Length: 174
Image (spheres, helix red, strand yellow):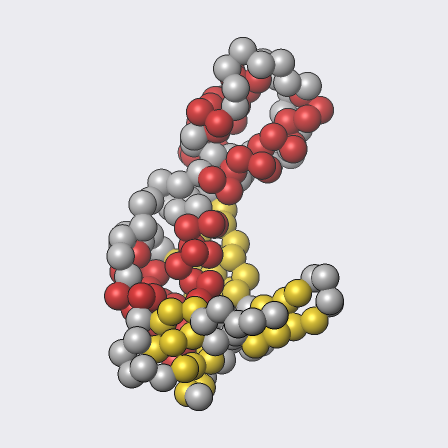
């Protein structure tokens, strides 16, 4: 089995992000033996996770409270491989302009006058489409509603990434 060290893994991650989300600036840093990826606006967390999940060399099973190894098939060489990063940490922020726009949309759709957060960052542009028009929302429930929907907000459709496609996750038997 081929081992892809952390330095090479970081190179693959950066290249895959550039291919999939051109024009979006990502900050990719080593964090111990894990990788931290940060960005503002742009794609949603699930979009980035779908792209980068294959580059994580470990997973965690909360039911058994254990870490496990993850492997991929390198379609270029045909080899089974393991990446040198334990985990991927994704951190997304929203610009003040987008946050203010989303704040207004959510307040308009829910009728809530107050704002349940001290900082308005993290609000999705498409929130008005997710909330049910005409439904009654308790303003105290706003935090739950917003956190449920903001991960789906995206300003960027992913493009095909040859780098990410090169590594196909291997489904291991439990």
